Image (tube, rainbow, N blue to C red; front, side, top):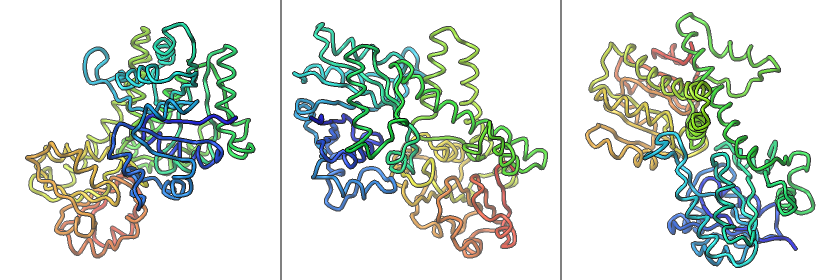
Length: 456
């Protein structure tokens, strides 16, 4: 008999993942639960005004919601009626006490483990879906099985989704990783989860793409994978600065480097630096782990990835300062794009947020525009009460009478804008700083703009 599934946490991990699991397992009941009633209400909204934006997500939810996918605040009922429990609660960076600024804050995870222990009366497979430090599964197992009955088997199943392509990544993943204890119960639980990802009739993920390891390897792999990707972003941005100083073109350098099949072309796009919920948090977690085990040189190495990322955003403001006659005070800058990447409304750790705060320190008059992230931008910058910050859905309105346009997110609509119209509406000399290198520089310069790029 196929086992029913519940996911605790209806955020960026739980919502999309469970929607696709329900789609590919129509004979399983899948319930997503959360203590946030407003979030669950949005998932259940009649007009499908979902709490997160992700291309393709609405179509999947429309297909399965109310059939075998359900959203609820009744956590106890869902846990009691399911066989497999995915845990997708938030694990932010700890901002207090030991490990502050680097370690993961596990208080929500522990509270969830204790709730499962209190509610569940039958054996369950517990699946870590949140990104957690190595050996967290052992702590979860200790809480759940403290009575010696061993009714719970804890697995690690980290997600490798990229926001903006999450649905595509879920439907056709390059790999699924499942870590379990090397015991008969662990092997059986891993096999159960493998069946979930294989889908009904083995029509979802090919078995050879479902990789199994021990629990500790699975937990560490997630941190390591994100650290390696973040490292590539910081590496190409370090080269970008050298390109600007020497007259080289970072796109040409990246193209040739990427042609080496030992390196490959992905994550070699220079820009304002990485953002999102995972990269910085996971690299900092890796730094803390290295320090905890006395690997201080390794910790310093990975911390350098973070320092380079922070430096890139500081460098953007410094270049803007120099290009605008060494003063930004009372000048209007239109910031195009606040989301950390295109095709998402997510603004967690977005480079645009850091840049906006640095510009506010320079007493800039800042107008922010973004097609999907304006609401989050207002929340993120709400504490800057003394700053002159306005928000505009329309990029043309945002750019009106601006001294500069600062492109921070490579939304597809930006290259298609009428840049001649934008130029006519701006104060002169008009500047465009394209930190994503996504616009036609030659066309902008012919229009009359002074243009800055990253790595050029």
